[in-house]
Length: 332
Image (cartoon, rainbow, N blue to C red; front, side, top):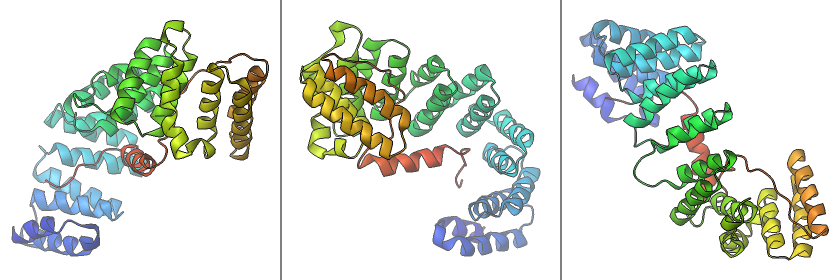
């Protein structure tokens, strides 16, 4: 037991080899120890030694089948091996042990969605959302996957289960989905909440400004609010680095009746989009620039919020990378 406890106490990437040695010593002393097999399997998986990790998870489960975490992690490794059916069986066994197990529901939701079983996927996703309110980034991943599969309403139903604690990125995503579904009032309300929570996040300010000038309902248009939202873009000089931000600033100038400035900004945005290979965006912006030259506004539909700009970008990229793979359970 001392080897097992010590190995878990030194759980750090730079000490993996030492951990493995202590876990193996623990198994020499107690070959059927389910905990030691589980922990060794987990560390071997982190080292990329998939087949050995699978063997130790199986040994752990043979000694104690009532381990939802072990079943979940075994499923992840089987999926990595290409055994989707085996992975799903393992995740279902995790739910047999613990019916509200968040990671197993998350993983099954992704697999059902990949198999176009949308209703089953939504059931697992909702179970995950109800049982794991401390994982807002994983909820965001699921909502984006549903939206990407064309189920915008399903994505919003998931976000309705978001944690009570306000989260700017979830609010912004809900706003973008509401906009695409035609609920402009809900979209703007969500973006206002997101902007209040994170006033310096560029993509949120960008979307809020766009929605405020592009709303079809005149009662929801607010040029002053749009201009205020672009303040963070202008202060950061962010629009000089991103075609989409330049495009939004152009639209706000047009809404203020400043069509010459709007056209100039739009042409710069289109040129930047072309230089970065965003040809479809460039064409759309060029159409808007022609409208500004004629003295009128153009409109476009918003897609999902862009990747966060500035300081939030690196953290968001890490979140997406971590959450786009099956959820792995940690140590006990």
